[in-house]
Image (cartoon, rainbow, N blue to C red):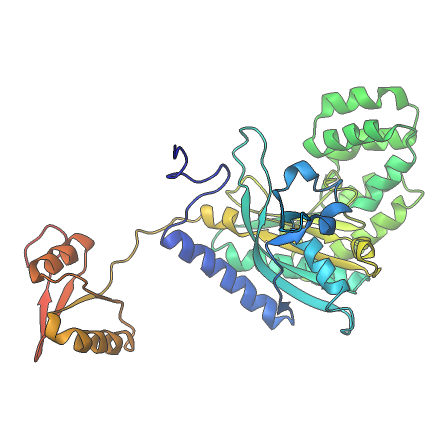
Length: 402
């Protein structure tokens, strides 16, 4: 019994006409910008061995991946992240290339969404990876490129980037005598800005200076003044170095004229085990979720036997595209009709029209009246009849007589 032969799986959807055009336009604009900045396109298989993602299981649990086996029984998964396979690529086929590597990609990721959260399972991303640049210069290049990308796709809307350095949070956690499970609960509360539960979780550590800083962390949001408060709350055991590094990046971005677009958010602690330094998210006005995320991940390539520093980001292209108004599909300019004796001539005529930039359909109807009825229904304004000569019939529009 074919119960599901007319619907798409949970978390997936069909995209029609201008929806595809909008996505392609966003992707092309970003890709062009990345290419002009020296980034080269790569792609990785949609299907990977599970082992590629196994070391990142804390970030991408096995239950969140689509799994299958090949003909030899080896466990495979649909690509759940773009950066990890590109790290594999950089550590293998690109290992001998001079660093830094500047790479960009346009491809889907696939993630199992549990419950009824309404999130997509198929996600189209456009992103970059800068591999082998571990200094302030690399971080600055990536954040500035992300800001330029947001400016490229935002249209008339405003945009902002929220910056953090995960090292500050890690320094606080290192000074908290709590179990790993408790620390993860605390991290989740900070990420979700759940002040009440965070206060309860930190109550047993109220005399600990790091705990006081953790309790305040979700409120450390704003401009340059955030640094003064963060230094005051906790400035030892790597925390100061992390703040110093983040402040350098922030000040450079201000010098680039991005002050109105960049904010500091020290409560940005998602994927804490994945990132090793600066992390950031990008937002467009009118969209309530991030359209871009990225950061530094210096430990990832070690999983593939090639310790190398790296940083990058990914745009959630569909999130941006879905926020843009899609126009009704534009009707072709011309419908070309011919009888059986002039089919080849009609195809040649269609090609000549398209070479002049016109959008043309070749009628598949054997009957002229059916072709004319279709043209009017589809909103095509001109019907060209190919015979020994070309006859042009002008139609006023759907439902109207010519």
